Length: 129
Image (cartoon, rainbow, N blue to C red; front, side):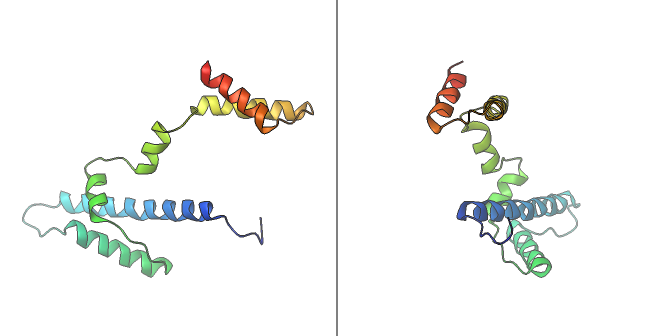
C-alpha cells in the first residue's frame, strides 16, 4: 500500500534478499577467479568480497557487507541459511500449505470466515494426517 511503512520483518526480508543477490554475484566472480589458469594471479576471497561491495555501492548507493567465510562455503556448494531453514524448519509442506489456503478461501466463500482457533484445529488435522 502506498503511504504505509514496512514492518521491521519486511525490511529485514528485503535486506536479506538484496544481500543474497550481491553474494550470488560474489560467488560467480570467485568461481570465475578459480577457473583462471594457474599462471594468472587469482584474487582471494576477501578481495572478491571488497570488489563486489564497492561495485554494489557505486550502483545503488547502499552499503552491504559480505563475509568471506560465507563466500567460501557457498563457492564450495554450500546452502543458504534461508534455504536450509525453509526446507527443514517448516511445519507444513508446500502442498499442505496450499490445502489450508484452499480450505480457508472455500470457507470464506460460503460466508464462514475461520477464527484463529478453527484454523489451528484444521492445520493440526492436516499435520496429524
